[in-house]
Length: 348
Ligand code: TRP
Image 1: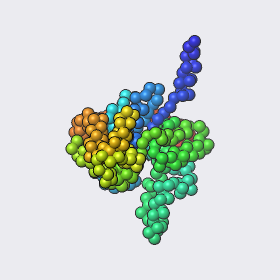
Image 2 (image 1 turned 60 degrees about the vertical axis):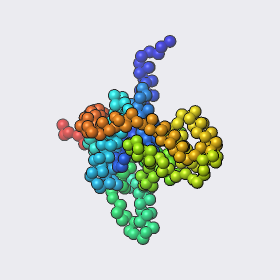
Image 3 (image 1 turned 135 degrees about the horizontal axis):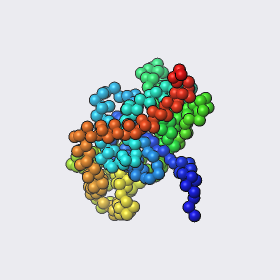
Image 4 (image 1 turned 120 degrees about the vertical axis):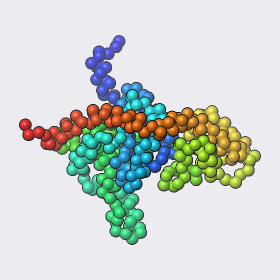
């Protein structure tokens, strides 16, 4: 028997998940970003019954980057990447953080109730202090308030849309705890306004190694950029570090960066076949060629779309504006409610 409609509706609101995540706009997307964050997020954007928010965190980018050209161009590249890879922008709300003035406004309300001691404990800030101490500098040398207050801005990003689930990397889990802490404190003072978010860290998603076997990261200079032209992509894959075993000699898949990169793109069957090929002594050159072919076949049609989009920034901009309008339709009335709650309201 079908449930009465009102109960169905209630059930839906109770189980309604809101997924939100931000992408800092510094640097160009690489295969590690693709496998670890972009691909799972885009797959999730097609799920029904979930409202997702994906945004370009350009205010966060300013904390580390003072090159306007890099900020600007990276915004273009990252937006084009998500669109080219098929982000469902009918379902997901895709916007640029700086297009939502309510986020800055909320940041201040939250800043006024956030304990300084909480921020003192943030890993990123503490690491910067530690580095200064180690080289004998003043502990606060070159540390900007943006870095110190970064978790408050991130809490505003999340609480603004009452996100329930926030997919992030391990390094961001502490920021989610802080967002909960800040949201709870606001609720305690001003009434129940915020849903408390939880971090979603997917252990199944591979942390992709870079060409040298360490985690693929811009800071290690070991990345394989996602949108290299075909020839250069092949070249970059050929540079993945292997060992001196000759063709015909059996090879280990454990601790092989090449195998891990291949496996991140392969289906279970292909993975098994490659394992066997390693045991049978496939040459490194041949294994790299197969790795290139597999990756290229997955991204080559999106690459065409990407190149087209990059040439038409106005199209990307209007897509972001559409997303911003949808995001503000949520943020603006909520912000009025929050202003009212803290006592900022018309004198009528
Ligand atoms: N700080 C995040 C990172 O470096 C990016 C980010 C900004 C974010 N705001 C967010 C992620 C809100 C999740 C939710 O990866």
